Length: 327
Ligand SMILES: [Mg+2]
Image 1 (tube, rainbow, N blue to C red):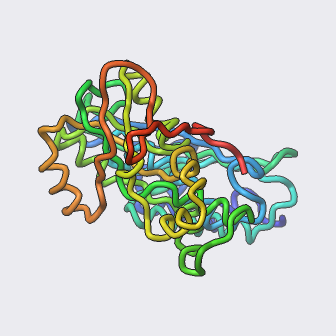
Image 2: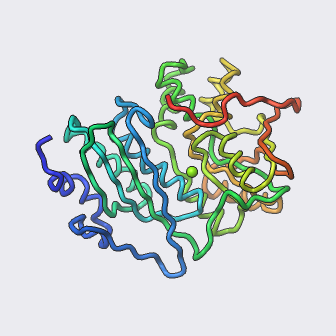
Image 3: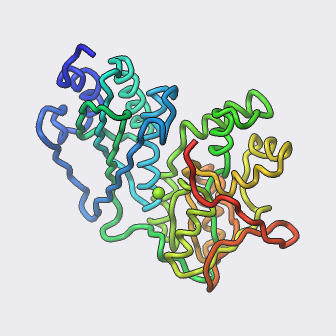
């Protein structure tokens, strides 16, 4: 790679910081960040390692977009409105400048969706695998945020969007699963590669005080709901028949019912799971229409512990793998 680190930053990364005056076009040692009056800063970091969190053959634009999206999803889970991010990258000596250019382009297209800016970063070379780390910043009404440990017994459990698409998309990409159609393949794979952080939903749930607790589904529905239940000191009961499945996911499950384990245990959906008092049902239905996003009631919380899933006949479905696994 011929260009110096300074050249690369000026060429590919400084344009991503153009809308943030406090980033000084990435020419200073650090950035200045103002949070609006009456708001608290929320921050989160996530790393992705080649061969662990993405495949070597994945396109750099998609790796970049997902790296940003998964961090924004964590902000969404807290009810935060995002405004900026930092990125640190450790590149193997063999990385091409074209890879870095496409990586920056992927960050650019994702940040444009949410109107946020790069605020700074660091690049270094490594003898290990390509490693990417991103820190995202958002803000919430002063001192308030959505949390995992604050669900109450009697609350309904909701999930946004659709479950299982990303896990099925990964299975298709990995050659473990045959897609039911070309369109289904494209939809499921896209949901794996390009998750949509539910930022408008998270912010609305917090600001309208509709949710008692929330988190995002990164490790799988049962695993993540398990975190909420355990941290809230409650049991979560969900009904299989209530889970929102996309037409593409339904087509896959119609061919192989065993795939319901992927819906329950697979990760990477980046939907929000939240708990809400039953009194809020009408407001949540209204919010779903306003956001044009399904918000589906899938169960409830009660005294006790653990997560149970029941089928239409009330029989318990054992979840064989709660939690995420590498490909
Ligand atoms: Mg999370």
